[in-house]
Image (cartoon, rainbow, N blue to C red):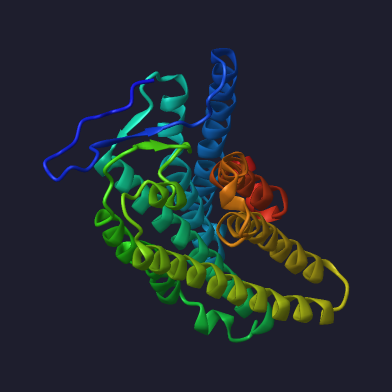
Length: 308
């Protein structure tokens, strides 16, 4: 494997080497086939949900509009790092340019932040529908739904803007080998020529605030929803409400469980193998399972998918 020794005028590296999964060629080919299959199924599953919502007039409601945007977000999410990972698995160079690495960092974490905001918006929608059913049509209008969608997208990209700008000021003068399959925050900061405590603290603060504020809001919303559902007499209405909220909370658990293990657990960053496995889980597994969870536990979505 060639390690770039080319420096630019300022003395910083011009490209990074993503080690990815160093193993025998046969195993790398197997990983390429498995990951490619998961990636394609993820694209197909989330695209199916978008098409189902678009084609079915019955699903033109705030809950499903948010779900369709969430599915499109998952397509962007999994496409921000997996194609490059697949290319590097079968490539000999495994390189990524300096600008490409920082762009990948910015887009991946912006979409990750937007995912937390969308999950919060979806929990707010379920809270209104179940805890305030009489006020739901007047509060959750299509205008408010559109504002929530725009806020989630814009908020995600604005939230990571300052950390991304700070990362452009981190000096990289070598080595340029990243023991990961994409440009993650920890491995990048580890390659800094000099300590960057302000950048490290800012990135840690921003990520922690996004994770904990959205998670606590979602947890509080679904706690109130669960209390309201348990008060409803047993029957189809109660079962439908519980099924819908259970699928939402399962998606929340998959996403936040893996993200917190990665970015909150103090020991996870010290083991590159654990770091790659956990990152791989929330990069590929959660976008793959989300369409299955929403389609299998939702009758309206199943009917729309059958018609599609």
